[in-house]
Length: 278
Image 1 (tube, rainbow, N blue to C red):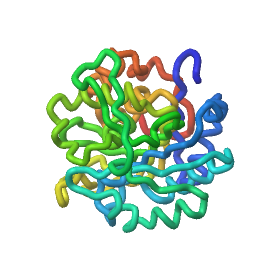
Image 2 (cartoon, rainbow, N blue to C red; image 1 turned 90 degrees about the vertical axis):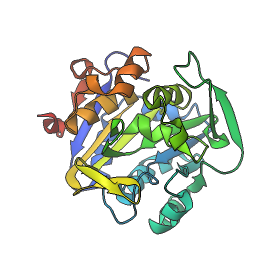
Image 3 (tube, rainbow, N blue to C red; image 1 turned 180 degrees about the horizontal axis):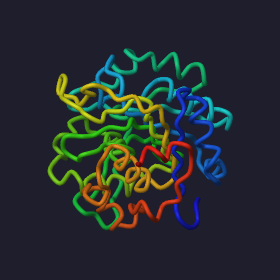
Image 4 (spheres, helix red, strand yellow; image 1 turned 90 degrees about the horizontal axis):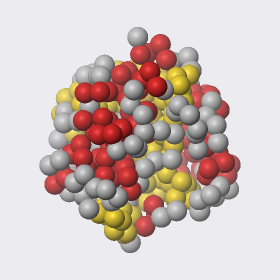
């Protein structure tokens, strides 16, 4: 794990595979940390979007780039997504050919709303005393691979909101009361070890389609954001999306709960895409 200020890297490149590889090469010790876990779980954001609406879900090209980087560890490898109130994981796996993508890298696709679950207590909870998650989270090295999006209720949805989408219950809308606090509580229990944000096509200006938030129109940024501190990743992503991270409830609360750093000036920024902050 990192010591000192968190390093967040932003790489701008139209080739997603090159961008992901360059961004990961800038981080220290993440590849060593993997070895203390029994398997790797990649949490994508699929059910938050609509198939055929670029930027509303994690792109397959970015997922494939991540798989290419981590499949060399010769560990069991999982791609996970959970059902949500307005979408079905199985539908998105099929519509986006995720099964074929997984097969190329020896990965297994799992619906995080099915099968055996764990009820995990939340330490010093803000709102949720426990969180129900799929058993595959146990001893997993968690890689969050969200898409970079604005959001109608939390202003932005990036890596910590992606973990909110990982919880077992399908009807996640029931957790919208105290949403900022719930996002923080969930990240206390299944905090990602590594975040790789898909900013190839983002949702900067959005609107609803079939009850889901999509680009109106999608915005091509051709960037990848990578870091080990999910709060810092979201703070930087919020800034790129045009929002002050100090005014994003869940980011500010997560920093107050010491889950990470939210002040841009306290983050070690690297990469050729940092210019997107201007």
